[in-house]
Length: 158
Image 1 (cartoon, rainbow, N blue to C red):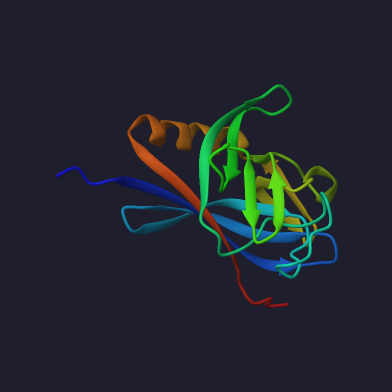
Image 2 (cartoon, helix red, strand yellow):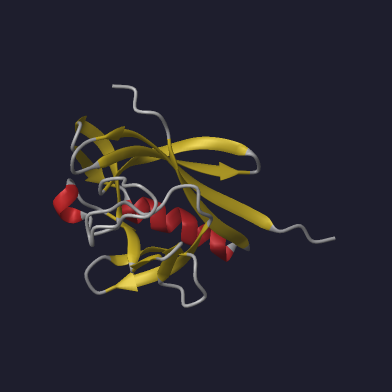
C-alpha cells in the first residue's frame, strides 16, 4: 500500500501591527514540527474584508503549494487553493499570485508571504530565506511529497 507523503508548511502569526503581521514558519514532516524562519505579511483583516495588496491571505484555509519561477523572484513557491495554480479563494474574496519571497517590510508584500532569518523590530524582518525554502520544498516534491500550507492566527501576546 502506497501512503501519500505530505509536507505541510505552517506559519503561525502572532504579532499584529497597523501594517504588518509577523509569524514563524514551520515544516511539519512525518508528524514532527520544526521551525524554519520568520514571516511578514500584510495586515490580517476580518474574513469578509480585503484591501488590495494590503491584506494577509486568509487563515485556517488549506493551501496547495507549487513550484514557481518568476522573472523577478526566480525559483520560489506559489500559494493557491484553486486548480489554476495561482488563485486563492476564501468566500467571495480572491487573491492571485501569492508567493513566498524575500523582503523586509509591508512595502515588499503586496499579498505575498515574506520569509527571513531575523526579526529585528515589530515591523521588519531581514535575511531572506526564499532560496533555502524553495530548495527544500522543491527537493521534497522531487521525492514525491505533496506540499500543503496553512496560516494560523494566534492570539496577540503584546
